[in-house]
Amino acid sequence: MAYKIVAKKLNSLTPYEIDDDRKKQIVSELFLQVEDRWETEPAEKDIELFTLKELEAAAANIKCGKAPGPDQIPPEAVKIMAECLPNWILAVMNNLLEKQEFPNKWKEARVVLIPKSGKLQSSVNSSRPLCMLNVLSKLLEILIKNRLQEELGGKGGLHPNQYSYQKGKSTIQAIEGVIETVRDYKCKWTQRKMLLRVASAYKTVSAVALQIITGTIPIDVLVKERAYAHYHRQEETREVKERARDNSLIAWQQRWESETVKAQWTKRLIPIITQWINDECMYCGEEDTAEHTIFKCSRWRENRDSAYHELGRELTPETLVMTMITSDTAWKTTFNMIKTIMSAKEKEEMARQERERREN
Ligand SMILES: [Zn+2]
Image (cartoon, rainbow, N blue to C red; front, top):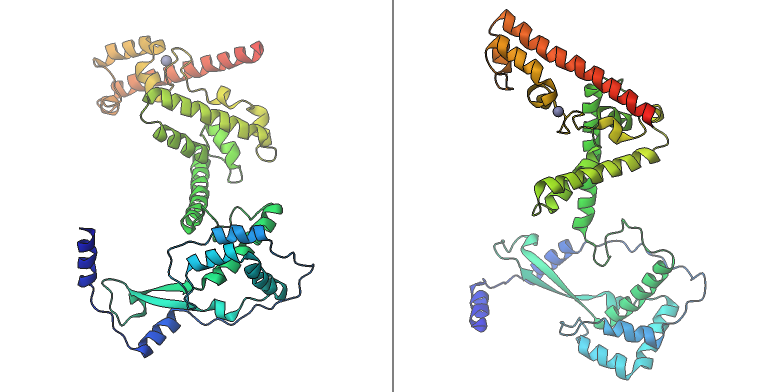
């Protein structure tokens, strides 16, 4: 069965025939000639020769079952050589190391052009080149690479932003990192712009202060909060949301405490964020919103009832505006109800804060 599938695939491929000139042209376009800019300088200190242990480790890294390079020596043969004649191979490698040479012959590769399906054969992009290097050259490469890694590891390793030639790191991760940074910056900028308007603040007020004053969680903390809720979406929603919000407030408070440059004046006024942004209704503990205050909170039931008697209908967010514009009296009744509630609430809130201050 497997044989049939493969045979069918191979038969369906159009024969790949191009003349030698075209091959040369494709290869020269795929592999741009670069000037050899490397100049070997004498080593600053004596180079320690490769040891048998290093050779053993490098040979173990050679993969079997791969096609050989131009010298036609298969990887299996190199492995056996390293095992049976280690001193001989080690002498060759150390000779090259001491001379600081990498043989030109070992830089040559056997190139096979694999046609990409659906592409015109005439274009350079129609082929995917496969390069087979001499396995002995790979052995020297691995020996040097291991040395470099050890050297770098001893000096604290590579920079975390080094992505290429790094195990477990990819270009995609690097790109994601860049996008993340830009998005983060853009979000922060947008939030600041928005908060400047909300707080009607002067344009030099820092974002940190604006977030505190308006009780707006910093955007990056909020993003993490949403992500947390998303990852735990299988659990009970309300509980997850509360936990996520608690985490955000803790993170925000910690950040506020460690802020030593910006918004120092605001910090003296509002040292504890939760006391400032407390969003629980002080009468019933429900979430304190405009809707809650005007239409739901039991503290203002009397005000609502008397407005109901005067208007002859119940107020809801949906009917509020329509009711207000029906007549002058209706406008005044509604307006007065809201105004009375708001000023009473503000007064009581001030008194509550004063009490709290005295208690502490
Ligand atoms: Zn309430």
